[in-house]
Image 1: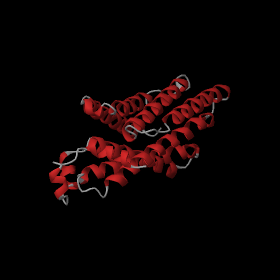
Image 2 (image 1 turned 135 degrees about the vertical axis):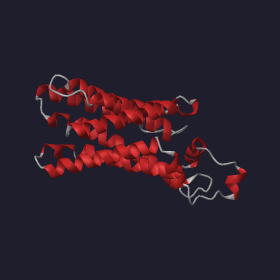
Image 3 (image 1 turned 30 degrees about the horizontal axis):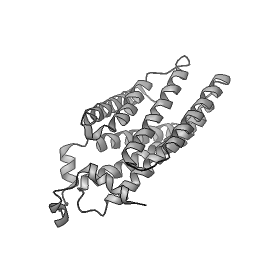
Image 4 (image 1 turned 180 degrees about the vertical axis):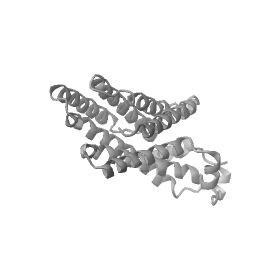
Length: 236
C-alpha cells in the first residue's frame, strides 16, 4: 500500500522497532517482549509479500502476527491472572481460516474481512489492557512519569491500529484523501510504537521534568516498571 517512499519508511520503522524490542527481550525480566518483537519482524516481512501469488502466504503470516500480539498482551498485562487469550486466539484462527477459504473461492479484497475484523478486536483488546495499566499507574507517585507516558502511547497506537483495521475497506475507494489519511494514521501509530519501546533518553528526561518522587517512593527506592505492572494483580 502507498508510494515506495511511504513503504520504505514503514520498513525502516518496523525493522528498527523489532531490533529494539529484541535487544530488550534479551533481559530475562522482559522475555515477553519477544512476542512483540515478532509482531514487528513479521510485519516487516509481510510488506514484501505482495501480488496474487503471495496473497495466501501474506494472510497466513498475518494470522501468526496477530497470535503473537495476543500472546504479548496476555503475558504482559495479565501476569498471574486469567485473560481471554484463548478466545482471542481461537477467534483469530477461525476468522483467518474463513478469510483463506473465502479468498480462495472468490479472490477479492472483501474475502479477508473476517480476519481484518478479528485483527481490530485483537488490537482494541491490547489497547484496553494497556489502558487499565495506565489507569492504575497514573495516580501512583512511585512510578516515573515517562513510564506512565509509555503506556499512554501504547493505548493510543493500539487504538489507532484497531481503527485502521476496522476502516480498511475504505482503502478501495478511489479517493486520495482517504488514502493519505490512512497512511498518515499508520505513520503516527508506528512513530508512537517507536517512541514507546525505543524512547530516547532526552525524551525520558523531558517527560520526567516535573516528576518529584514521594517519600514512599524514596523508601521503596523507586518502583521498577515490572513491579508497577504487578500492581494490576491487586485489582478485582
